[in-house]
Length: 324
Image (cartoon, rainbow, N blue to C red; front, side, top):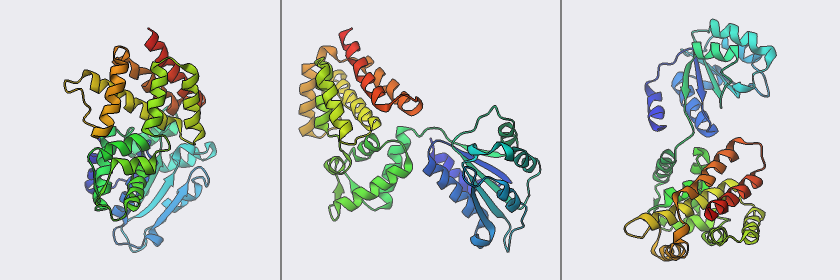
């Protein structure tokens, strides 16, 4: 869970070198911003703070800034983004500083990830206080959406936070911006509803996904390709299509295997559509159907293969499972 890490920042001792690592860029920046504020307190930021980007500026100027003394403050902060882009010709200067950091400087480093095989990376991990987080869980993201709604003083219908995460993904910055958009969209309306999310956020609708799943289970390959092509041509990203397909199949499986034959996630009017599809394809519904979707999700985030090809292959694999 990410929230214990965020809460621990208030009590964190500021060592001379702190490395912040993790896959969410907004969250990395938020952690760094919190540490900068903690280090500087009420001191004048413009006189005690320097920021550099290792990718575009290099770090030699940052090394020089680290040697400067704070002005009317206990510490100065030197903040370097994109540390993973450190140039080879700057490695030795960087290593020298790591071995003998300036005690009145907070050397704050940010990176998505580092190659642990490199000498300078090993040395950094030896001398730095490392704040690292992994990919954000769905539970973290749902909790974050709820917090964002609370900050906006906006009520919402049941299941809205879960739907927002399903549609937008697991990046805190994107989720926060989406909540603000939804609050503006509903205006004076008392609550943000499921329908508001679909109207504002969906290029792909429940109806579109019903058509895709119908084509998969009916083994109509031509219709499947047409439906997927229509979604992609509308500008929808493959990852979102995949997430909605996963959600759709999960609901079908939940209805089939639950004692109530209903899904707790759905409004009544939508329950009937899913129940009808469960009755139509009951014999073919099995938990293994989720595997091609989860595999494709991993590939979309890590493989150089075209996203469209990965998406198409996932649904073709679904059809293979259905024939087994």
